[in-house]
Image (cartoon, rainbow, N blue to C red; front, side, top):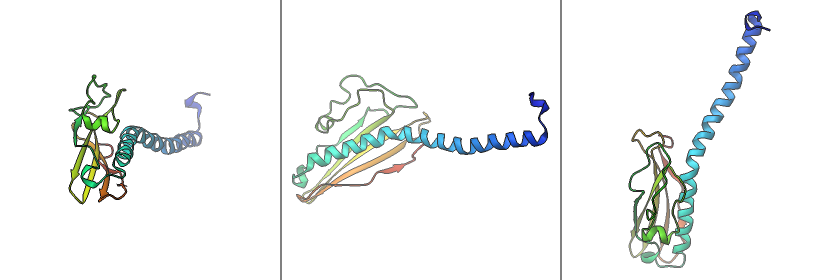
Length: 163
């Protein structure tokens, strides 16, 4: 049956059916696409904070965490996955936290450690520029140790989820 032989009612039904399928399918596709782009930093920050919490367990606050580590790689990948050259993740903090990327990735990571006699904290950050426009998505997660108490892992914080 040719398209021109459809009655107006049949054409309206076809258009409404196609619109319904798109109304359900497109938002689910977009949500899954966003979720897949966030899987990398969420998994990585979770791993960093778990290892940092384990590293700090039973230690006094001033020595609970390794020192801060700079943004690694030094430049946030712009709209593409990057494969780091050997030695990129050689900073002592990345080694202490057993963290490195050996496969192409879209985010750069940093660790900030704050230390004093009563409380120490470690904040892990992921920065990504998924569309290459210079505007960054930033995700943060931290661990705090008070005195010699158990480590407390904070919530994931997201700034510009999909910039």
